Length: 607
Image (cartoon, rainbow, N blue to C red; front, side, top):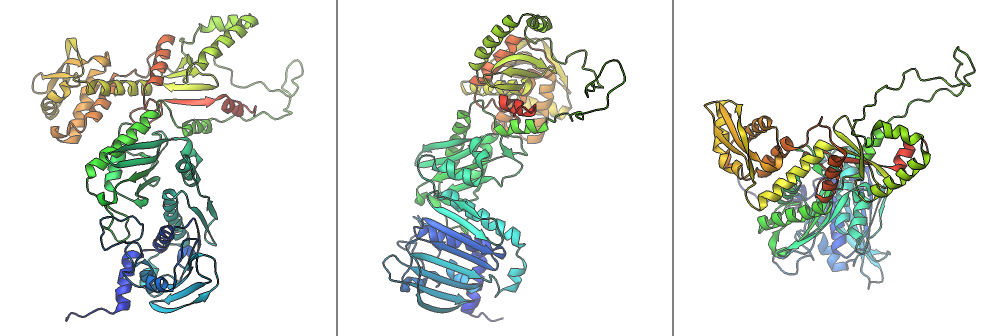
């Protein structure tokens, strides 16, 4: 078959296939044009999920007749000051969005500059242009796109339902609104609920805009990011590890005001949260990176959704450091959603009927029916309850002493964020009281985090000290596991764990890390052997150092089922308050739950 030149209308349709994937792509391109035009207010109206109508109105600088005609031509743009692509500071720059949209829809553009007496309107119907002609209007630009893909039925057939396409449009506008906080965004239409996001300004603009879009719960459970290094500035908000999701849909990344999905940023986020989240949980965050435009290439994808950094390792390291500092500043905080989930799990007993049938027996019952299940004769609360049962009974006979003790307890509890330990339940959960709340602490999860953080701190200053065993502990293992452990022995010695071969199918543990005390040595070695088998290479041990430390911390922490004395419980609470990230264990689960006094009053119908 001979080579032939394609007709212009087919060329435009092919180009449209690259730029205009779905209605959301149209909205993104048109809103970006409005933002580049300096709009302070943008209104988006849709119908039929954008397939029937997309209307974008802005109050930007507008266009005169010459610019209006050129705007619908291919490769015509006002976004490049010269012919270079090394210093792009605008959102749109390819110069083919309007031409592509006009090739596959019925397009009209009305625009008026501030110094013009009236506006002009130009229409393009499936590639055929008409106008421009005069039209009365306010300053700015109004773009209407009707019957998208009517000229390409095959493409229209593959679009999703109206609701799905409308949701995709909302998501695209969300990302643009996050990056441009000083612009007022409004959305309406028969296919959606109205949305109104007023412009935000001042030092709290990022937090306020993210609260508008992601929600107040995110704002209340996130740390602000503010870090710069080597000309790279990182800002935004990072959700607490306990405020996590089952997917990455709540992660938003921006580079120089452009929403992107970049492997470098995704990888940096995974690395920063690796110590705090289980592998099937994902953080919620909005990350804004500002960098010299010459250090990033945004021209690697038709929709500009991907980019390439000149120095990816510098960006990755800066983002990891920014997130780590933000999470470290959270201290021992856990998200409020943990307490809300706990409250939701409580259920009040069904009340007895107001006038129940009186039971047989002497004396009137006045409608009261005694409970059919007696109270337990023995409380499940551990004997570590301060003062024991006798002091509680004694307090009932001495009201003045009880009141004096209550005042002292409240004052003491108010001094500490996690309060003062009052009891231990089920030999794993510490009950504490602070100034205005009940605090429940998982002793194993909390201590696991504390040990892990101590490990990391010691490792940064050199090898972790070991503690020699009086009698070496021998662990029987398959030969291949023994081989892996001995091969990894030099790395493990840096962590204070000294091993040697004890026959073909056994390992002797001569020293364990001193900070672990008396760990579950057998379980630790078996767990490490499983990890080495999973990683399949001793070469990756340096990269997996945090994972090894996490396994050691788990086996060296206070175990469930151990009774603690009051002073031990309080020492654990004080160390939690002084240790960053102690609000969640190394698997991402919360270490404590705080129930405010008001929450308890609501549970009992007092509010």
